[in-house]
Image (cartoon, rainbow, N blue to C red; front, side, top):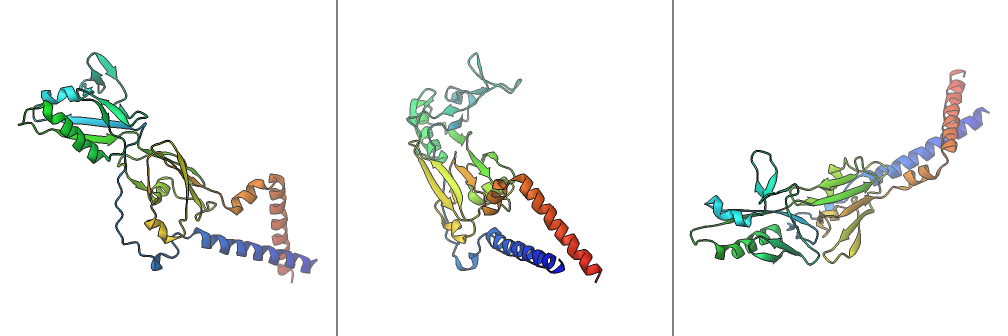
Amino acid sequence: MKKIISLAVAALAIILSLGSCNNAKQVVYWQNIDSVNISKPMQWDAKIMPKDILSIVVRTVTSEVAQPFNFYQQNSNTGTSITGNTYQTNQGYLVDNDGNIQFPVIGTVHVAGLTTHECEEMLKAKIAPYLAKTENPVVQVRMSSYHITVMGEVASPGVKSVPQEKMNIVEALAESGDMTLYGKRNNILLIRENAQGQKEVHRLNMNDANIFNSPYYYLQQNDIIYVQPNKLRTNTASTNPSVSYIFGIVSFAASMASLVVNILK
């Protein structure tokens, strides 16, 4: 009996240690970072896409001059925005399926495919003919609806707003509380929808430092990140809870029996 208990405990210890070593190797990020050159600069700016909501504000030296170009006028007393006698709660211009917005005075403007800076310069040029030469309009464009979705084996899954209009995969995972120990770090799923509505699937490996040089290091608005569960998680999920409970009791009993045997030696 003593030999059987000792063998069972030893076998269990070996299994657990092997599993722990294997998991430990998979948990470490960027394992080859000392041999990968990540110093090359990577320029990236978000491009405006259909269904984006843009916040656009025009400012001039004389505030009255800019009013016709500002669809929303802030009410200082209530904090709401008004257009004539109509109150608005959602400030912004919705980019339609053709990539256009309807801008005051100017009319239809195609903005899809532009960065916010490029959109600012284009609108500034279109507004200039309506203003006196002494006016120097300032146009500010922001993406009000920029967000990504993080799902799966992370501490805090959900939809993440990106007010700075720029986020990389590392920041997205950190914003989600990092991956759990059950997350597959070498096979993260990125689902991306392009301007034509077509979905693309890419896989990212956070164990490999080459992720810093990947064209998918920076995320695009509406990206979906799914951290898949590893084998330990899937095996646990597929195991009958009662079996796991019984296995736990048996393991505990074997450990206690071994302890008692050693004490009574």
